[in-house]
Image (cartoon, rainbow, N blue to C red; front, top):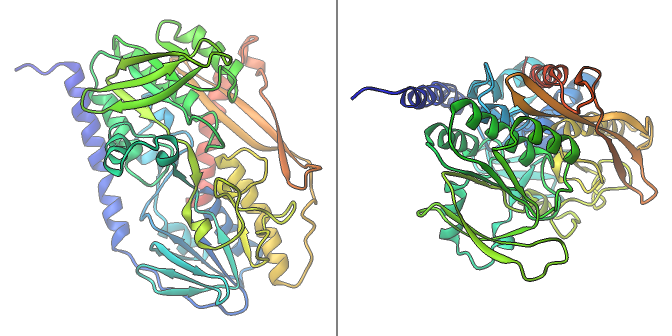
Length: 456
């Protein structure tokens, strides 16, 4: 039988995924020795953007601090920019997002422990792990990221149904799992048909622009591959989401016949076997009845409601209703324990949960930790307001590559916590549009830069 171009593309995708596997196997064979506290010992739980930035920053600020990063995954995989993989952008492969934890730990002089945390004893100042025993600390940094809350969003689903939907309709918002690989493979293997994207129904969630960037990138893939189908977004926000004007302008200009946005919906069921999704669609925010509809799909990415990683609760610190850690004023210290710091997605500061915010927060918290360990006082309001503390890029087109961006200024809000105020600019090279080639170039440069900072 003759092999068509799509079959060839599928095989190429499988080969690319397989090529990424040896580095995973090598990393899992390495071991790191756990060290005990010695007066200036910091243990960081979580090896994401926040945790790795913190580890490097602490060693640069004070080489005498003993730093240990504990991470359950044996390789690093980035979430930011990962939608570019789904969009089929030139030169973007799985290896673009992968990093070896042991390389920076050796270079910058901190310890890396590949293990899962099972308990935290704040009184004894120890962290228990599955493979490295108990690790003592003077300062504990919690940077564990998020978890999905299928149970809250779909209370009638049992554990088997949740797992079935999790695998069939990957959310691809948690790094280090196979979600990104699974969604990428599903797109490579799809023929004609629709792709359904379901943003988190409510509450705070990681990288607020992510579902809408994914919409554009998958539409780009469908357009370039000549697939007959649409990208249908089943949202709850009525068009009021991160960078909404910029996204909607780009969708209308580049993918007018591919993207279909439904802003007032409530997903009620998913049948992964029949490949159908059932939802109630409302006319507007005042419509309380709605109409039940069922849509057939080829690929579905359902991103559940987010909650904080259970590691925060394990530490026994005060949290809000969604499990995110309460902060000590404008600092990154826990409200509960002056020897516990919280960074990244897990904070309750009113700042956007993004990769760049995690980096900014890690640098700021590192300064606070170094001051504390050296008996000094750090002003948590110093340097505020911080302009462009968060810069978040989103790819919206592939041929030519174009992107949009948002910047946030972080300030000390009157409520007693950090707050971000955003601005979505129109670039000079955008000809009056929110998107431009220059912003796309800056997107690639930003991602390459942060990966170099953490791993090179």
